[in-house]
Amino acid sequence: MSFSSLRPLPRCAAILSASAVVVAALGACGVPPPDRLEITPPTPIHDTEQGTQHKLGITAFKGVSAYDDSKAPLVVSWKSSNPAVADVSADGTVTSTGSGKAQVTASVPGKSGTAVVATVDINNSMVSVVEASGDFPAKFRLSSPPVTLKVLVKDEKGQIIDKPKLTFSATDYCVEATPDGIVHPLAVGECAVVVESAGKRASIPLDVKE
Image 1 (cartoon, rainbow, N blue to C red):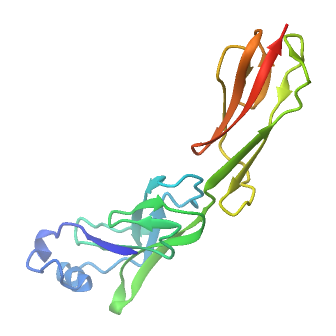
Image 2: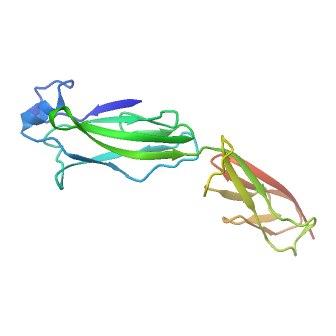
Image 3: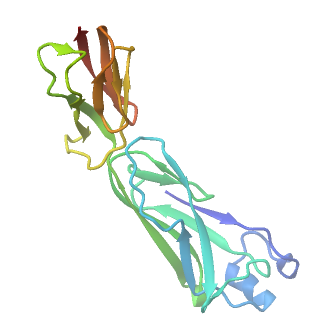
């Protein structure tokens, strides 16, 4: 899906309608169009949860200098190569919609009907399943050593997601789960340790003995 947004026309181009050719507006102001475009932030997008949004912007250049768009308007067109992975709105807001690869392109008119473009890559892996386990003894006692959880996070295709964002918690006071997934027994009782990633959860029930 693609969109265009028009910045307010300066006084020298006010006689041109919003649908006029932008290069003509630039010429009317005596300002040559930009020859280079950068998307900010330029880093690739890698999301694991549907609906995650990123607001992108652009910086235009003429030669080595930043383009002064206060003297002439720039029409910025945004387009996604795969809206099923990431959609983009007219103001450059990217919304992750699924797993896979896509490329978001920003373009502005250049010389002689050409376009000046910049792109950002998207490689999403939406979390579908979280699996957690730990080498807990048959009787987990207050004196038992802490246990490090083993976690697998998979996408819709069953592929393991590398370095997912994880949060660890406990449903009650009988254990403590540290931010790096280490479970310590704290008190006698029944509870569960919970692992969460992008809204998906796994839990392990525990019964801490004296």
